[in-house]
Amino acid sequence: MRSFTRALFVFAVASLCFACGDDGAGGPDSGPPDAGPPDAAVPPAFRNPVDLADDQLALQALQLLGADVPDAERNCNVCHGLTRARLREWLSLSETSNDDCLTNLTVTSRDEAVPMVNCLRSNPGEVASPFSPAKLGYYATAAHLDWFEYLFMLAYPDSGADLYAEFTGRVLMPRGVHVPFDQGQFDIIAEWVARGLPMLDDYVPENPDPGDCTESITAAVATHVGAMETTGWRAVNADNGINMFGCAGASNPRQCLSTYPSSTATTYGEKWAEDLPSSVLRVLRENDYWSAYWTRSSADGRYVAHGGDSGAGGSSTIIDLQDNRLIGTSAFYDPGFFPDNSGFAFQGNRAFFCNQSILATEDFITLTTTSLEQGCISTTAVSLYQHLGAALGGGDYWTVDGQFTSDNGGHQPTFEDPACNFDGGADLDFVPLIHTGTNYQAGAVVSEPAPGEGDGVLSPSSELVVTRVAGAGGAQVGFRLREMTPTPSGGGYTIEAPVIGMYCETGGKPGFSFNERWMAIHHYVGPDDAVDLGFTGPSDPAFAPYLSQGASNIYLIDLLTGDKIRVTRMDPGQYALFPHFRADDWMYFLVRVEGVGTEYVVASDAALLAEGL
Image 1: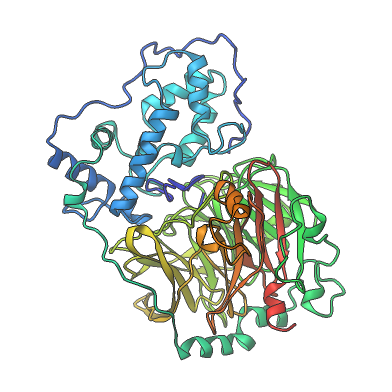
Image 2: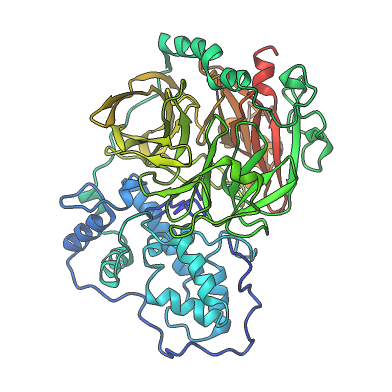
């Protein structure tokens, strides 16, 4: 499940076991208008009733899902904390699916089947919008079963097979190497859902409340930041002469990207940088398609990647800013780039790692388990929502993953930060990779317990990892900073990850600057933000549009002091999302405008300004 809110993924892929399009085959008007049902005139059963007492039913369903009960299987809990709040969230998604999408489980009419299929997209009115596990809840575990195949073939007799393959690729849960549930196993889960999750509280304990956040920044943070100033990837890449995109002729990093228009020149950007008058936001690209989940860029800033079909083919897109070129990929979401500009990763039905050099010559990257591009590998060792780093001095490349909450906000009004439904069994899974000279090779997973923590992010050097920390009811307490120290042992590694900082802020999955001084987050506007945005309070009539349209802003957090700097001031319905850094510490992020099909790739010099450059 990606998050079951990205997945669920609160969206694309990416969630019932639960980071997140249609390739154009079979839109709402495709297929013969009077096409009849498939050969099987009688639809297969969506689910079969199960005659078990509530306690037996609940236990068996929780065992299948992977909750913390005796004899549980390892399934959805690999990616998601199976807390009471999370399981009830998925119930709500399932009930909404019943009401809005799966409206007739004995459907035989194509006219009725077509809107049922399109309802399963993130944005039902957009044919190119990807299918989303969030539209199914627990029912995403049945995406591969006969009933859904019947529905797609009934709706689209000519193109249904391709469309159904796209659907299962994005939606089927649990993901990865897990064996999909058979009809009998799904019947148990569906029966438990139909009864409203009886006995849930009896089997699943409430997570302990960690209490109020206390900010703590140890001396180890200053020691690390001081070392990275001269030895981190920002300094190393500069010494290695990596050409930063848009910096030709610039004598200072802040002079880069000067040929791109400022945000004030765009239709929606009049207030994007209102509170940082000395900084600049550069609009690097205006996209006429909707992306899915997070956006990340290469260390040199040339390539920008995210989930979403741009028309270049496949289900994800890599933008070549230098050549103004779109590169399609067959992956789904969760792009990442190594900090030395050597390679990139994407998630499909498993994780793929490729040499970055292929992007200069390829217009489409085919990532499958049977047909890989030159210099690419696939691995099941790295799970969804991974983040990348690389050890300094020629050490291994690293990834981290663990429990997560998908975040695909701004496609519809979004009013709060992603939930932190991480449970007491959460851990951080670190995977070392080496480059053989041709491609990457994954090592054994090393797990470090991190109860109540998720959405882990590695710093570029892999020496820090930050997590979002769960509080009562799935609310976020803050961000916890750990030192990551691997030690070779028996052909693998052991890892120590002591806590060295706690930052009492809330927001989405963060990004580290390449000098490892800054952490960037996006935060969805809520009532508590009214005064910070210049209103008298949440009841101020002028603030009301934020409460109906939503918005999100970008913030910098100084790891040395904990000070927070707001970089944007978005208007209602405007979402600044997924901030991350390139090697010279220009920060890139995405802007979505709710209800408008246009998105912007934007760059900010805020971190450089804050450092006095």
